[in-house]
Picture: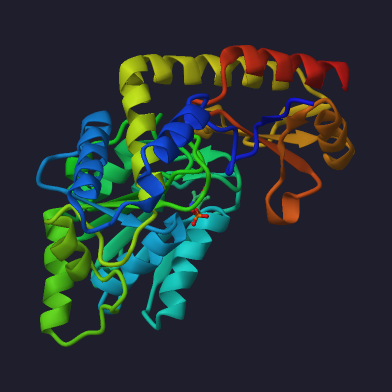
Length: 359
Ligand SMILES: *Cc1c(COP(=O)(O)O)cnc(C)c1O
């Protein structure tokens, strides 16, 4: 039976992935040297395409890592001497905070109930905070932060660095990189790829901070520290042997997205989100888990299921529709549905009809 994955990562593969993998094998991409000219060209193509797609300033650097979780660790390790500040409203933002604890920093946080957002105007950041960390789209709860609120902190605290996790909202999210110092994602969500590649975009100021800490004799790590990533990036390479196949695939998927156009993708994402939220709005069997309409994510849609989500997830799976369960304590109460570029409007309509059949 053909299966459709609406899980919030890994998820449905982008439709052109099989073709690109086949081409990669035909062209021997998985066997080429990561120090050779062919790889350097692939690296450069992917970086250039990504910068074009997301409107990333020329002066920013793109680093390839293994996952988004690695990006969180590298950011804290390379750029925080002691104090980080975290906006926590779910499992992924909590993990970012916990990584700082594990690395023996002294993080602080503002934490709100999962499923809600922050009263941004009332929040003041401790003076000693070096970096402010946001999870723009909390995949565990389906709450999205309006980028304007993130920018307001850069404007209020221009000397502090700003980190933004866009793992489950890229490429839908339209971010002004000039007001962010670290932006990161992994490829198994919005880019519709298999898991195994993380991407971290950093500002010149973020890199200066890593050099500053190193010169101060602070430990910024060895593997994938920013200075080694930079040294190799300047040669269109990575310090170790990277996932060459995925760097190639990412470039190809981005070229596909550029051809469709982000404007179209954003419009379709909003149409699909509306279709599902409107349906969920009828209740009472299913209803949106995030009460405040203004903070509902367009790319990860979370619903509460009356009587529990387990039977519904099972029945949908039997029909070939794989959706996510709730996250953590909500595992058996909620469902989570991803709305990425790989999910067509036609698939969303079928999913809605199946939900309706099972109510
Ligand atoms: C999935 C996810 C991560 C973790 O990504 P990995 O690639 O598994 O490390 C981090 N943040 C958010 C918001 C996510 O959705």
